[in-house]
Length: 404
Ligand SMILES: Cc1cc2nc3c(=O)[nH]c(=O)nc-3n(C[C@H](O)[C@H](O)[C@H](O)COP(=O)(O)O)c2cc1C
Image 1: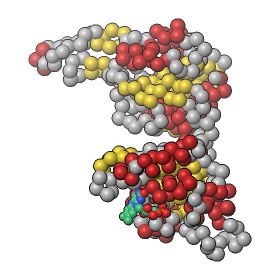
Image 2 (image 1 turned 60 degrees about the vertical axis):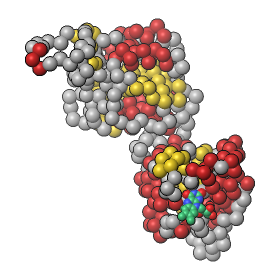
Image 3 (image 1 turned 120 degrees about the horizontal axis):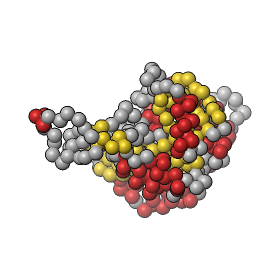
């Protein structure tokens, strides 16, 4: 994830607390991810953290002095009380890794070092990323302390499961830096889609001919993925129905994987009732093989043609379920973009259609950018050229937000 996410994270400040867990070695990568998203980072380290990673590394990567000493007299403004000044500056407080010790002290409101004092003095949201040995984590003391923090509204990023630095297997690993950065971005985003349920289809479908061959299309799921990430960042509840793709969707979305057009249709039908908005970004096959052969068709079988039938037209089939839901379709066209899109929008009873120009570089399938138009029954809302898919996703969601 980067900073082309529609919201200017460049004006946001994160105070990043690092405590003395072995995973502190990941802190520099977290700083890189945050600054890469345009976020201003101020690092605060506990004494124990400095045993694992040097202030010099973090100072170099944040481009700012690292705060370590509660009673420091070396200040840019000698009359600022350091922990109060930092606490006031924070849009978000991130603590990663958070040791069992730090979590216990936070739960009790103890303020015996600069980091704890600063958290206590701040009104900003706090994201705690626990990381420790599996037994330390499952210990009732730690679990009770985490529960106290959760009840207080502190965000806890669940530790990952896997091989731990101490040699044990289990829960307790610090999640990967990009996962932590993504969580920070989500908490900093304006939650203008909070309370909105969005169902998004994406990717291609694969229509099997025999156990070896299938018919598919060039969709990679990138446009759908951008929409999923953007909607999640903006607070929507997102459910995804995805054809086979080689993509990691945003971690907050609930994903249902399907293979063929018929499975996609069934999954959309089953999930539509909970959705306020349906975005059909999948490239669903128009034609499917009329028969499926259980045994592999052999080279010597003299196959001269494959009979095809039209696939289920999902949008037409679910039209009776539309009610006051907002339906968005996608069209991919090589010519007569506006006319073809308008025709599709009217035939399928859509509230909005995004028509992509395909057959040119920098637009359509397997590209990071798209060009085309956004159309509603009121007319063309936007005619965009080579816009990156993440920015386009936010633009589409802006148009939807104005209408739901
Ligand atoms: C090699 C080593 C690794 C440690 N790793 C962790 C850890 O991953 N998680 C944890 O909670 N404590 C860990 N500890 C214990 C903490 O460093 C210790 O509880 C310390 O008091 C934490 O201080 P702080 O919370 O002020 O940073 C480790 C200690 C050592 C010596």
